[in-house]
Image 1 (cartoon, helix red, strand yellow):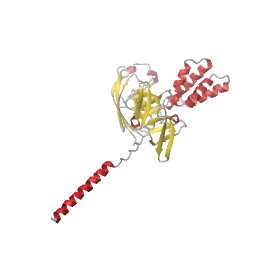
Image 2: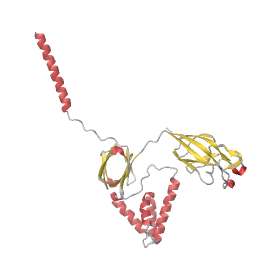
Image 3: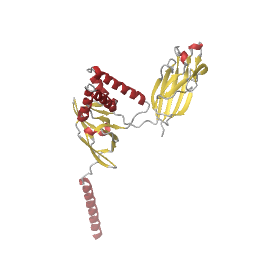
Image 4: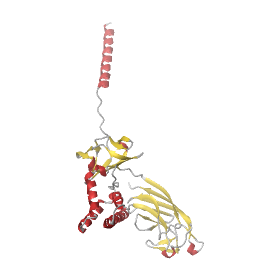
Length: 340
């Protein structure tokens, strides 16, 4: 009898302890979740780059259709506009005004300062050009031409720090849509291994999330017989990086009309002449990376990219035959494996 009562007491005690533990677990306050790490990189107005964990989990934007709250992890980039950078906006307006200053030195100084600001101010200059007159108009046109020249010379090497064109509104880009409006989140704190940095929206030029490049790219391109090196190249639209492995195969035929009803394959033939540089047989499929030197592709080529740029194709035709018609086409298959 005593043993039975003791057993019942132990069971009751165990149930009481278990219930107490469950109650404690249920009533214990949950630890607040810390904001998720952000891989957005912040490009600041002073030219510096900051990365780390943001103190906010979303950004609020006033739009023409009402306020919108966008989670940070859905944002690909956001660019505060000129309205959120009043000091820079005034500096830009003053320099544009100085293009019509009385003194030559002041006009020249303003032109060089605007060029230094870069193609991101193109939109503001184009707007001013619509009503500009005399020397101001001429100087605005020269600045825009300089920007065109800069972009052509830089097209082979993408600038990872390149930022969006200035607009007056703030622009937020997500995977699903782009929002234009006014960001009302005034400040950010960024925490990394070096500490915490407090930032105002006006400190930020642009925030961007770097997308991972695919490990492999496959692309098919059709190169017409009339896409000849003397005139143009057919772009693949694929940007290769230095060190990438490239495999190209090509099939098809092109009629080399200056030699009669004779067809060339992607390997070409020396009987169709030679194209320099590269000692490339006439009729052959050729290529270049960016604005680099041309090289023979032929029916198959495997190589390692020696520079960064968009790869494009053409048909090798000696200059003295460039005015002829070359019916036919080459079917090109491009396979790029990214450098590890």
